[in-house]
Amino acid sequence: QVQLVESGGGLVQAGGSLRLSCAASGSIVSINAMGWYRQAPGNQRELVAQITSGGSTYYGYSVKGRFTISRDDAKNTVYLQMNSLKPEDTAVYYCNGDISTSLRRSDYWGQGTQVTVSS
Image (cartoon, rainbow, N blue to C red; front, side, top):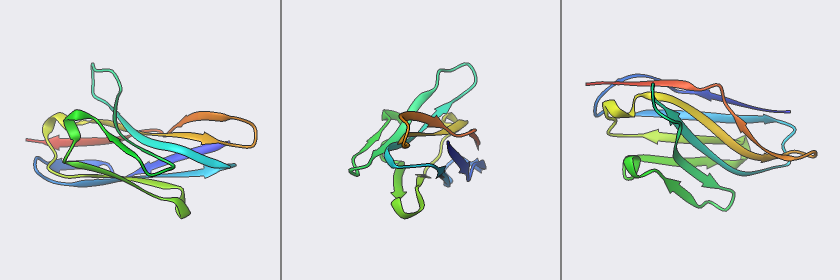
């Protein structure tokens, strides 16, 4: 089994910064990609950023130039550095992992961490 545990959410003023962390643990053979999604009340969950095992990154249009995704392979951890935060960034942020165990390759999700940006 695989677990994803997020940390780093909180309340910040507009223009401020936060850093989210997501640590994967369990019977991991390989991590194919990890990413961050977010969901605001009344909205669908959207992809914020993703990083592949090869180091390729993808960013949603609304966060390009403000957010940076990175990873520490030794710790099976992915980070999301969020700068120049805006009130519209307020959402629950979920970590996602495309992870292979000895049994299968599956998508795994963290429990979510709240990010609130005040104006």
